Length: 228
Image (cartoon, rainbow, N blue to C red):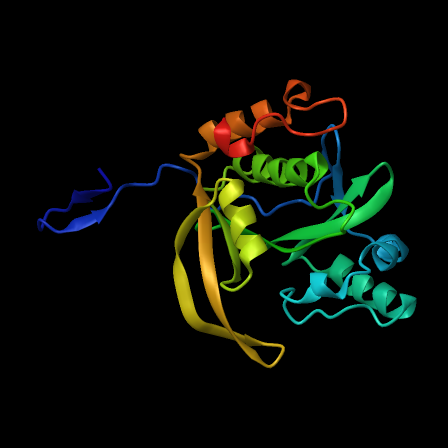
């Protein structure tokens, strides 16, 4: 049952027993077996400049455009490091910064938060580390911070992002038409979410997929995440 009746016979939402507001993320280090999420630092700029060489990777990344030069990368990375919403994390693999993502639209009163500004280098895309990074951030949001809702939003025309959301267990909620204008063009925004009630099953699925037994000696997955 998704609702109850008040004393007037009107349907209203179920009570929320979770103490609110929830904590604001404290920007801690999140460590996995294959990737570590660390607070984004200006020191990561040279790594980003080397990693983000494909201009196509910037197409759907908000107003962000490819770095003009190392100085531009350093200036933008420094700004991102100072931000607290979005709250940026760098994906470190074997000591190298190979991507970043963030928590944003942080709403402690509603216990709702979004993952976004995701930019992975080509070397990271499709790897176990890339998926583990998403798992680490979800686990932090649901297990450490006890948020109720975890969102993913993207340009409705960004097919890779939509496939990634669905593969990671996000549920499609609809498309907001003409929601934004960015880079001089229209954006219809596709909305996805994971709820706290869905997290225990999804967490178990991630852990089974990430286990060493699900990968061959060359690192190829045996079973897909959706199959668990």
